[in-house]
Image (tube, rainbow, N blue to C red; front, side, top):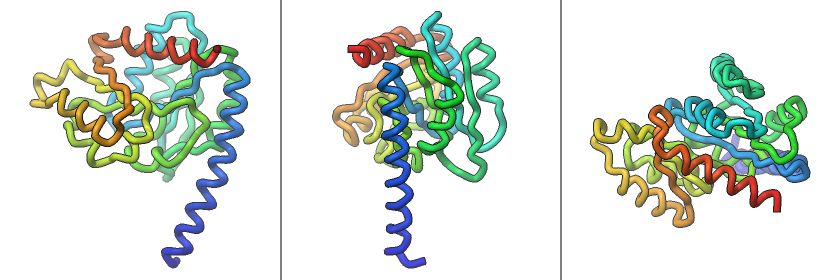
Length: 221
């Protein structure tokens, strides 16, 4: 296939996805539902963070869409907290798309003025290009990954509204410079917001849940 044909095919796929994402967004906006697309590399701690977030939000209405290539392990962990969750297995696919998410929204029937968390497939490349109808992408970056990840994968961190520096309890053992990591995030995206936290110890969770509640309140205005 020629390069021109590849570009044509890719453009058609993204155009169709964007139309479906716009439909998802209309549905979610009508409900006043705050949808967040959690993106990261594998092993960043997204699922643990989600479980702790569900616990911290208490009785707040919410639902979760879990994306993985295989297994339902993460969805089972989410359901163990009492939250509603749907697992999407993408097989050889490296990301969720708007059609998959739209079908999951139909099945979940999110409640009005609720949170919808979409845990994307662990991948710092493909999910950056695919709009799912979310209000914002939240990039989760483990401190164990090093300070240079934002520079190596700029598209993802440029697309994100918020970056969560997770596993900060491990920072002293990883010889990582958190200030440099933040500087690199803002080098690729000057407007990005950053929260440092440890899902394991709970440090920084109040800042994260506060951010969530503020965004939901803004949506209701």
